[in-house]
Amino acid sequence: MIEFALILPLLLVLTFAVTELGRAFYQYNVLAKSVREAARYLSVRAAGVDVDKAKNIIVYGKPGGGGDPVVPGLALSNVPDPVWNYTGTYPVINTVTVSVTGYQFTPLTTSVLGIAFNNIVFSPIRATMRSPT
View 1 (cartoon, rainbow, N blue to C red):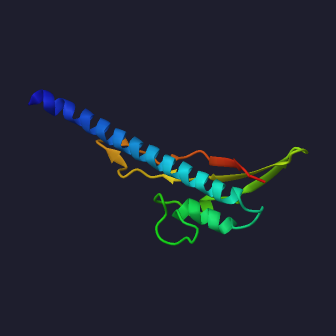
View 2: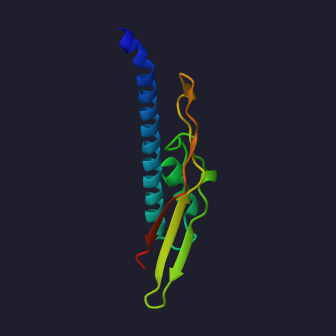
View 3: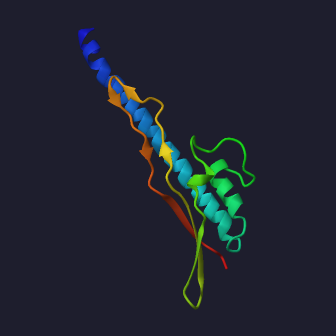
C-alpha cells in the first residue's frame, strides 16, 4: 500500500500526459485530413472558385458550413486563402496549396499535481495538389 501511494502521483501524471498527447495527435491528424480534402476539392476547380466552400470543408467538414468545427477552437480565421501556382511552359503544371495556421490545441486539464499542461500551437498544416488540367 505504501509503495502504491508513493508511485500513484507519477502514474497519474503519466496517464494524463499520454492522454493529452494522444488527443493532440488525433486533432493534428483530423486537421491534416481536412486540409487534404479541401485541396482535392479546389484542385478540380478554376483558380479562385469556391474558396469559401473549401474553407468550410476544413473548418466544418462540409462545403455548406455550419455546425460544430471538426476540432474544438478551429475557426475560419485559421484558414488563409488558398494559393494557386502555375509553373513550367510545356506542360504548365497547376497546383493549389491550402493551409491551416495558428491553431492552438487546448488540453482538458491545465495541471496535474502541480505539473502544468500548456497549450500547443501547431505549426502550419499544408496540402498541395496538382490540378488535372
